Length: 377
Image (tube, rainbow, N blue to C red):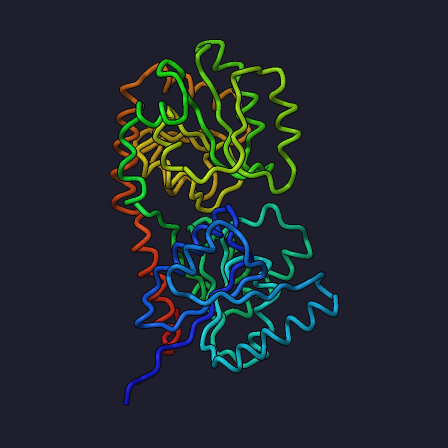
């Protein structure tokens, strides 16, 4: 008698631009469907990464709740529970706060044997009530998957038993960045002059990403390198961009806001230096992608950045919220093209050894296997 494949349901908020959404699409679309029967649930069936998931042949069901205590949300919750029972779901994995808050407890009440939740940030942007909700949902979980050691320590500090916490670092599709060696071609593609020194940050325009720190560093850099140009790339989900544009208003032509961009590999190929000045990060995809593209990276010494970058070897770490230190290291790299090249090569080598998305998928599948087979994760 052939044993049926375990029924998994992976739950995301949406498929828009963002680190969690990108990782969800990469992981869910690559899980071995010969081994697991995978279905995808979401709160909003929108975003650029939806096509990647549906192209993998995965059904995507939308549970478009309203406000937390609205009748529409109650009806949506009942539909979610009926789906879990009808499909005999063996394991539910939620990937963010919104999906855990909506789906986790009803999944348990519906009789789903296994609940997996995620810690993909350090919780610095969550208010007190959300912290309270997440702590209880983490304790309800059979396993919490953290995407960095920093996130794991965060969970242990919240009292989650260590045997329930597993680390699956983010991964990168290395093949997508393998052709990024043509710096000049990429610049012509975007229309930037060869003599322009491009410094870029790719991140949602959110306060914790530290764009304001970078803008404070700009005058110190352009004083030494007038040909320096700074690119701020990413969507503006919280309308924080207006404040940043006001901060940049006196910087003239030295700063450009490019908005959301889907051509990240091409953009990275054009950069001379990649910067991530965040003051809170768990495992930043942007740093991993820049390293995979062979770019020299300067990042704040916070959270998972310290796990990705060996300071002075595969990139440079600087104190967060310190524009003077950030500017000094940008100037240093602009002054030393040989150092930029050395750091970029070492970054790519480390990415090839440790950041492959295939490794992340295998680790996640191993956790599912252990849970489904009754072995503590």
